[in-house]
Image (tube, rainbow, N blue to C red; front, top):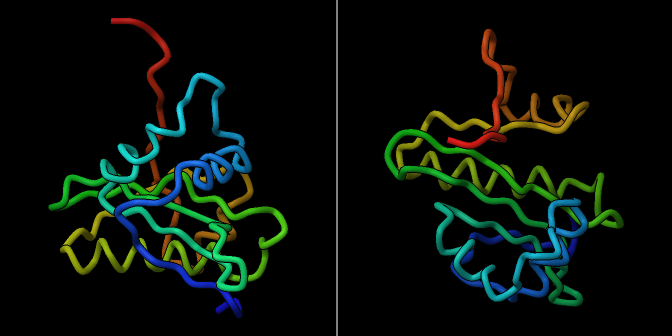
Length: 140
């Protein structure tokens, strides 16, 4: 566990801090609005924030999208570059998985960035054999 770091599952957080984390992950688009972050957090099954207790600043996050009964998907896991490789990502994933398990959600999936399999394997994740992740890019 990283010293001076707290990870908690939250219902609300400062939109600017969360936007900064999305930017650090490369996922923020200019058309996004920080005021929509509160809806994103509330719409998540679980939203975890890691903070540096010395500054109170959010330095990492992750969330679970779930039906609340059987299936959950971890996404948007990011830790600010200067805090990486210190166990914070592991703390965030652990908090999210524990939240799911306490609610009876045992099918927990995610899509990892290339080469991140080595991070997720020790946390209990493995590749889904004979499955291919897909994304909608067309029109109906």
